[in-house]
Image (cartoon, rainbow, N blue to C red):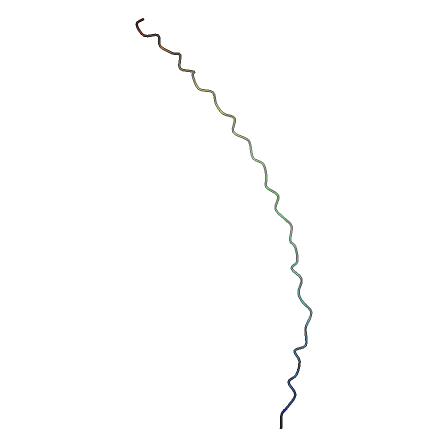
Length: 45
């Protein structure tokens, strides 16, 4: 006696719940600190 295979009953598919997307918090942008500009040292001509 072959019993009929019960078809799998599709249950409710859990949809992915999108949580709050953390936005990147812009921190203080480090400004380039200009250092002392090296002057060209004139050598003996």
